[in-house]
Image (cartoon, rainbow, N blue to C red):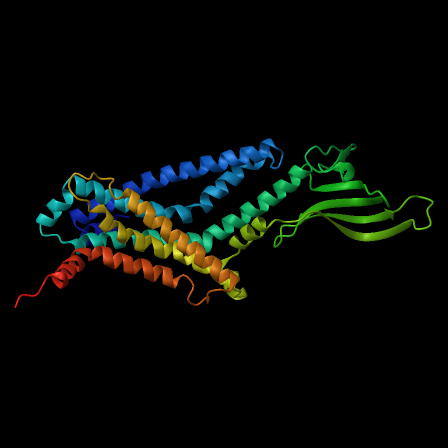
Length: 376
């Protein structure tokens, strides 16, 4: 650490260290506020689900912790963007940038510090989005699915009958595990007007198909009775394993599962939706740098405008940027846009806007010169 600190002091001047420190302090404050808002929103949503019985209360904090980790790859780009904007806006309103320029430090120095800071945050964002967050989302997905299955079985008591919420079937288990996943001596009656259907099994367990999110009840070593006893079409079938579909997975669950797949697996599959997911993860790192450079221009406000004058344009730029990436992602998934082109055009567009904003004064002078009438 001392050697690293010495290298940092040697490579960066006092002004550079001051700017980087301001960026870091602002990033900590912004990320803290955004993270608290995100956690509070998620917590309220989980409480609502637990209140109606769709989610066991004991898994709320586990899901909240995994969700907060998974959100870092989304919060870091906008947090870095706002941190650079707020820091430079404060320095501009306090005339610190004017003093720095009077000391002979040009704008390229500020640009270098912003690129260094945002580049470091982009590397962290890239590592999170490509490597860490998919594992976190995978763990969250499994906990959510198991929790929903447990919620569906909430109220199951060993040795007592339980009717489903829809009233379509009646369930009985002589012995039930603590996690309400494994059971013994199972009896199930499915209510049908024409032919009653009854299942009996020695053992059973709940299972979830990870890709589709479909929920199954797996019965082992049992019998299947169909019809009324004494009828000619009464049937008895013996089975070693029988799967019963309890609930089909929703499209939202399929998308959540896809987001949790490792980047290497997505690359090997190579489908349009897989490549679209990879491009989205890479784009979070790229937009961190591009937005931070744009923040330099938005932070230089005019006199008597205040340090928050560029905040609304900054939010507008971020909304446009993220929405364009989202639309492009949908186009690639549907096959309407070539995967190799993908989100490249969005980044090129934002880089073009960034260059226009940085050179707007030069472009304005050139435009005025062209409109100025020529004298004979």
